[in-house]
Length: 113
Image 1 (cartoon, one colour):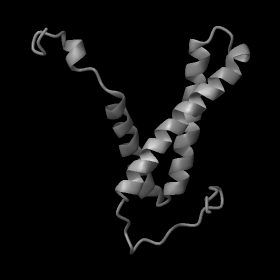
Image 2 (cartoon, rainbow, N blue to C red):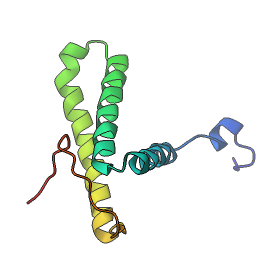
Image 3 (cartoon, rainbow, N blue to C red):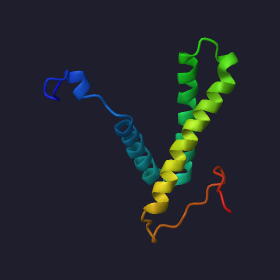
């Protein structure tokens, strides 16, 4: 079947990467308005955790019994995605603005070696 004869729904299906780009665009806007990337990152992780818990609850017939499996599955998925993106930023570091001083935010734990 050629792309032209494919159903309209299949042609307009949004990929996970396109959806992620929409979340990242919003996070970037919030990062600019809040002037605190750590705060926005923490909020985004919290939102992902809330939504993933909701997803698990919807998909599970017995969430209490499946909780540990859900935790392991979501944690592994996040770890793989984070690892891939960390490698990408190692290969292609983001350009920082030298004029912008980092904002101290005690609510966000900073990781160091």
